[in-house]
Length: 97
Image (tube, rainbow, N blue to C red; front, top):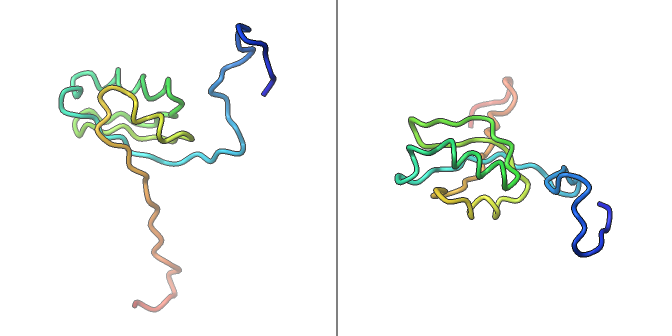
């Protein structure tokens, strides 16, 4: 990132990818009061750096990836941010335990 003097405008989008920060898959639950405006909540999540993959109005969930998970909690209408966990079923020839 290029250093700038106080008051200078950024030369690029401050939300650019930073290799030192990993992207994490997340599911964001929208609170009941914001279900009718879930698209606005999704836009707020994008503004905080989330790459929104799906907006699911019927269940009040927004899915995607983010680097700064804590920033997502500050979006109005966010009830919770949960990390998506992967499932590993093992190799097909492994014995059942």
